[in-house]
Image (cartoon, rainbow, N blue to C red; front, side, top):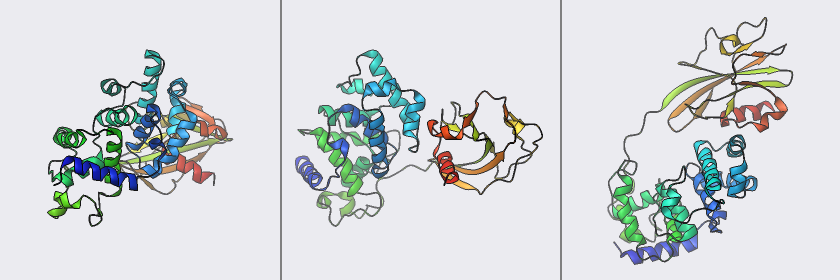
Length: 352
């Protein structure tokens, strides 16, 4: 294992040669770095890049973001999932405007105090924007540290940060560019020390890497037992009348909080029996049951598998909506409402 300063120098040299040209690496604006880090928490770089650009076109400053409604922010976030990220970003922007003039804090503890920002995000923003000497620990960095130092403690356990932080701090000790080192570590894990089939033969650090020297690349990092995936069966009622469609806004206690969807019936199995519109707050004289559903679609979330069917219901007279969470919306205005990805895909397919 090579000395820390030599390891750091090789990482930084590798980064200068191999780093991807990404827009958030061309700025020290903490707001833009913040937005990028929040997007990349649960989204790959190639997927997140167009969303980053479009989000900043819509909300170029903290002031613009704070002035927007939650529905506007969720609409701009549509397609990325994990919508709590957008809600926290919005809430933090409003807090910064209400507590001052919208200036992003330059103190690590103050950054940590913003809603939705934990140690990793605070370290990334603080080190890159302000030169704060605080190491990042994300999945890529955990993986590199576990392999290089031969750490066999779980990277997803409650003590993971405390177990790995001393190694990251030792590597950062004496570094004059902590933000660059943090980005180098993240990039090295993303491109070189990859989860599967890492390119060890061409790795500039292989001679000091314990996993490589002991043939343990496939065994590290160690993870705890995986959480069981839950299956759910969703039946969406696509109720149409004269160029309008019925939407329902989701409540606060489940996935997609605050987003809009078609009226939903959830069941414990694929089939749906004895269902009528009246049971779900929609009434029209003369209609009894529901039509045959469309094909079954599968949508995978982190710990849930959704099995989804759509029932196209065409009404001849205006429906009466007895549920206050239901809306009758002109189809030409549907793009104003933030919806889950499974709904946007259905709408895209329906409109060719």
